[in-house]
Length: 65
Image 1 (spheres, one colour):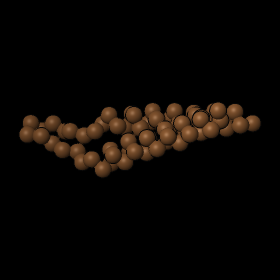
Image 2: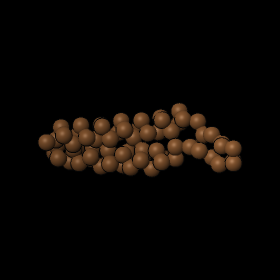
Image 3: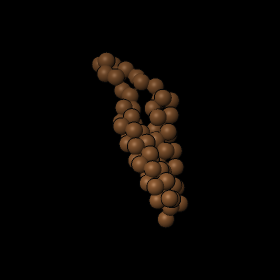
Image 4: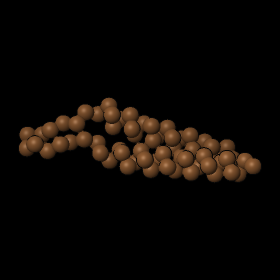
C-alpha cells in the first residue's frame, strides 16, 4: 500500500512538471482583434497536481513509520 502512495506522488509530480513545461514551451499569440491566447489553464492544473503529489508523499512517509 505504501508503494501505491509513493507511485501516485511521483506520478502527480511528473504531471505537474509536464504542465509547467508545456506552458513554458507554448508561445502566447495575439489574434487579429488583439486578444491574447495562451494555455493559462495549465498553471492551476500544474499547481493542483503538485500540491496533491506533496500531500501523497507526506502520507507515504507518515505511513512508513
